Each structure stands twice: as C-alpha cells, then as structure tokens.
Amino acid sequence: MPSRPDLEITSPANPRLKQLVGLRRRRARDEAGVTVVEGFEELELVLDAGVRPRTLFYCPELMLDADAQMGVVEGARSAGVETVRVGRAAFEKVAYREGPDGFLALVPSVRAGLADLDLPEAPLLLVCEGLEKPGNLGAMLRTADAAGVDAVIAVDPVTDWGNPNVVRGSKGTVFSVAVASATLDETLQWLGENGIRLIATTPDTETLHTDADLTGGIAIAVGTEKFGLTDEALRAAEVRVRIPMHGQVNSLNASAAAAIVVYEAVRQRG
Image 1 (cartoon, helix red, strand yellow):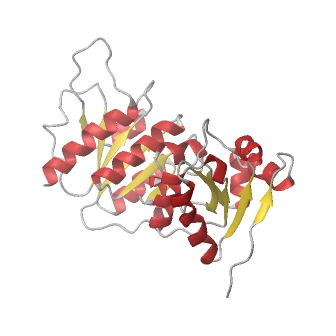
Image 2 (cartoon, rainbow, N blue to C red):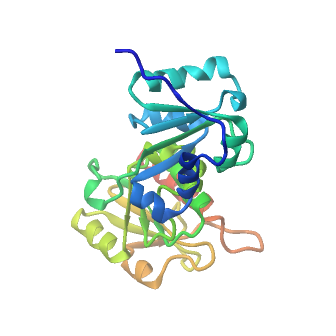
C-alpha cells in the first residue's frame, strides 16, 4: 500500500505547531501522553530502541546531510508514521535547541513505574533523589547506558522523563535504559522486597567508594549537588561511600559522581 503524502507546514502560526510548542509544559505532555525527541542522533537511537513515533516533523533545509538523512524520514513514512515537512522559519520557532538539525518527533511517553522494571539477577541500579536539573538526569542516563546499568530510578523527581532537556541530555538513551519514578518510601520498600542493597554516596563517611563491596544486587544513590541525599535515604543505606576529594570543593557534579561510583561497581563486577 503506498504511503500517504506528507503534510507541509510553512507558517509559524500553524495550530499544530502551536500545540507542539505547548508540549514544553509537563502537564501538556502528560495529558497528551507524548515525549518530544529533537535531533537526528537522538531520533536514530529512539528508533533503534524499537520506539515508533506518532509524528515526525522534519526540515530538509536544516539537515546536516539531507541526502543521507532523508532515509530516516522515508523509513518512518513507510512504517505508517505521520511525517510532516516544516519550513525553516516555522521549524526554528518550534525547535527546543539553538541550531536545530531539522528533526523533531512525538513519541509515546516513557513507561516509568517500578512494577514495569524487568531486572536480571543481582542488578546494578542507579537511584537519583530529588534532582532538579534535567541535564544532570540526562547525563546520568548516558552513563547508565554506557555502563550497562539495568535501570535508573528517579526518587521524588523535580522533573519528568519526558522533559526535552532530559531527552537531549541523555542523547535519547532515556528510551534505551529502563527507568522508573517513585517516592522514596516506595523505592525503599521495593528495594527491600527485591533484596537489593542501597549504597549511598555522601562526603560524610570514611569509606571510599573503592573500599566498599559493590557486587551483587545494589542501587547506587546520588542526591542533589546542594544538599545531597536526604537523612531518610542515608539511614536506609547499607553502606555509605565517598569519592576522595583533594581540592577546595567537597562535592562533584551529581552526574560525574554517579559515573565514578557506577564504573567502580562495573569494575568490581568484572
């Protein structure tokens, strides 16, 4: 069956583009059940993860290599995805980032419940408590994808997994790594039920992260840069670990700290 012809939008005032801009608000994303993915690399990773976009907006004038990249559009169109060609001025209006590369897609929202996680025996998890910055959460997802972390859990999150800056910061790995959102109480109960040890990162301990046993089923917990983990999370941890600091500051960027401890766990687990 031949694919349907593309809709073409050239006016920045088009109602569909206004709806697209509205999805910058979390409530609008939640109500629509969609996540916005912008960028060719991010879109490719999403497609490789088996996610099918609802709509793909594209602008050949902004593509870095239109001859090669139009294949993604044609493949999506052949798969029954609605593809919408957008004029340059209109696309630049709806783009989230400066210097857009001509790709923006609406995909189904990320499933993010603890009950949805399908974990192997002795999983390696990353728990992020109360993170405010979407870019940090996105960077942690990139680390999780690279290190083979089995899931990332956002505890009492300030942002949502569908935030465009989370998607951008993660380079699309929010769709390749299992994720969940929950309260701290829910997370602690779930970890206990599954026999997963909580490892808390904090500067207020004598135990270095290299001296702790990070094998078996563990969840490495990282808090906010300003306040760290809550007292409740610290009390619930089986082990508290710190990263050695030799400069004037006593903490690292949250995503950098997560990467250091996660990779020590990977090293220990062979």
